[in-house]
Amino acid sequence: QELLLGVGGIRALHAMDVWPTICHMNEGHAAFLALERIRTLMEMEGMTFGEAFELASAGNVFTTHTPVAAGHDRFPSSLMLRYFGNFYPELGLTEEEFLGLGRINPKAGDEPFCMTVLALKAADQSNAVSRLHKQVSRDMWKNLWPHFPDTEIPITHVTNGTHVSSWVSQDLVDLYDRYVGPKWREEPTSIEIWDRINAIPDEEVWRMHERRRERLVSFIRRRLATQFKRQGASEYELNATRGALNSKVLTIGFSRRFATYKRADLIFRDIPRLARILKDPARPVQLIFAGKAHPRDDEGKELIRRIVHYSRLPELRGNVIFLEDYDMSVARYMVQGVDVWLNNPRRPLEASGTSGMKAAANGAINLSILDGWWDEAYTPEVGWAIGSGEVYDDPVFQDSVESNAIYDILEQDIVPLFYDVEVSGVPRRWIEKMKQSMSRLIPIYNTHRMVHEYFSDRYRPGIERYDVLRTDNAARARQLALWKQRVRDNWAGIRIMRVDAESEGPFTVGENVRVTAMINLGNLTPQDVSVELFAGMVDAAGTLFDARPVPMEWKGEKLKGHTFEGRLAFERSGKSGYALRVLPCHPDMYSSQDLMLIKWA
Image (cartoon, rainbow, N blue to C red; front, side, top):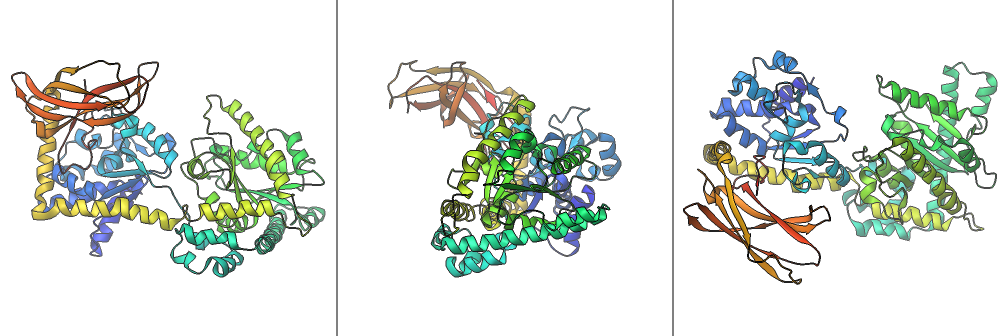
């Protein structure tokens, strides 16, 4: 399948006379396209593998979506050779060189071929799908760049978005058109436009939302009747579905794929306490669950079985509903009709998530773990956070703490706020939170912003770099490949002879100190390298933190090597420190990490 997608996909485009400059690989599944692009350049332009690799990489963008190691495809060498036995010789590679493209350690014969490793190596630009996911991805793949600080692992982020006009209800579209103006479709990233939501009368917002909750309840009753008939339910049970749920009650929704890390059953850890919340006669609450498990995910299926069981408990019956046959239609009714959107994955396993964005665009308020997109989106004005972003070593303890946090938020914040209603029947403080959620989140967490970010920060720079490297029969790509091979061959010959600071301090804030270094570059030249001081604060264990690179200048060559000099400025009080390092440097390299080489003093 992945051979067909990557290699076959590129060949299909070429057969249609489409020759893309930029190819965007979403997940490693499409990574084989990098090999086909290289093979095509070698065949058509007479390039070596290294030369074609430089040019093709400039036009490749890679996005990783999976924060779990098991979600990244790995194939045994035997399978790779079975399918690529006739392919890799066309690349001019040996068997070991070919298999090394998909290994963190290219010479580790027992390491399987990883599609994500291939994509990370063969794309100039790689990104995760949220700010937190960037940190997780850097930690997952840092062994590809050994000895580099985590903050310099070349994986950035573009947070996902949702297509607003595909998910908002028609009622809300009418309100947006009337009060926000029709430009919300054309300029959905305009904060100024979405700020007009605050001018919509509270009464209109609430009437619109109540209509949608009524439609959701009516839809669920119809689906439940179908669901119960299919299960052979009695006439008594079928009659009960006609009165399921209450369109005037605070409604919380949870609908998504039932993977275990999403913890769909977290809210059921303390049934007596949950029952007291749901069955409060003055301020009742109802929960709606919908979702599917992967056909081979037995643990996910068990989660569904447990939730169905909880929904039938006498103390919860009528206030907990599980809908089968989850699909786009169910999802649309849910995000448009619920009051609160519940999301409680085990941090940091939610790469981004978009269901909460769809709910927010419809005025539902998020109650979520600080994971994925919510970690960067949350403020107290727009919703509720479960916890403060903690990560626990003991998952059982974590589940206990976070389920209790959900109960606390429901009892102390959500339920009182929802039922704080004026004589007119309008909960103005709740509506204020709805408006804040919509006006602040919609202009950021939408696909227009996401696509613009990909274009301006990924595609356009890639196109420009590709065009530069391919001019004059790809002269600069060819030169860069030769230079990289020379640096690889000679990197081990670098020797840092000595590093001296003119004073060890103490210093006052605002002072600076001169640091000099003597470095033997072997067969390399000062133009081949960048020498830096990596300077920052020092913790109690003697480890640098908040560190940044400070460039050093070449001052000349002596008998034992080259002299470099730099100045450290002290910008805040505390214990400061630095380390000296040498990196490859070339004007046509995409980044200092390209060669995955670094030398520390």
